[in-house]
Length: 367
Image (cartoon, rainbow, N blue to C red):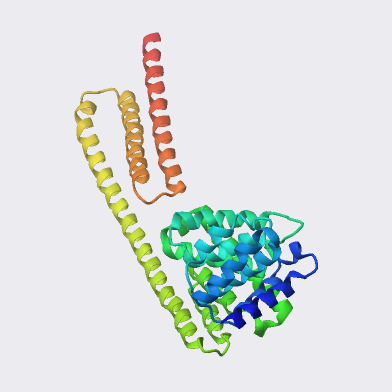
């Protein structure tokens, strides 16, 4: 075991000599170099203990070497699902804050281990700030690893919280995730060729498209990600894992169809309530007005009063309709406008007829 530890330490020391280390460490090439080392060895408790001891010993003497060993340990733990990588990041994040890539490392740890949706959403917003931030030492907006992790975390959140997709700001967030993963695929295609794009990029784009309701395109991307899986000892388990997202796509599709049906039922329910309310209002109003109209003999006054009552009826009906529109799920501004216009029209008719009646009375007095 000591031989393996010594090999890892020797490779870590080679990376330590990279030119412009503080800048180079924040880019994808450095991350891939770390991944290459981490994927070559099997992690166990003894090796982990040796690596942690090295990190702690070098924190004061050689910060660069300590960080490289930490990055290797983190990557080994993440890829081999060994221990809680979020706890590992929380323990050392403060020590390595001068290396901006630690924020990407934290994002990957959150993606794997965090399940609290409120905390996930907070991490998404923090990562979004990094995308917009311009720095001399890093450029997360063009770091394909960061773009992929950011998109995957958004997928994870909305797969937990399907209802939240309808919010306008969250729709923008999903579309931002799509832009980011498309950018990662474009960069990777340009650098490595279309057949060498990392398979998870297509997997995560498929998940985003499904969450946006584009099920066919999303499932096509997931199938493409399966095709791109390299042949390895864990390929079958990866295929099973990716197929689960196809199953999840069917569940989300069924969920959305059910939501549509519920919305349709709500619309029918609102329409029925409105119809009953209108019929009841009309009937009560007409029955209560009959006796009043039979006592008036002057045709002009009778006509004006009838118009005035029609105006009041429109006000009453518009108020009822507006009340039902506000209290049910059918929140459409167009309906609110119609209801308010009905109220205003009724009020205008009523005021106009009252003015006409007053003019008629004044005319009779003057005569």
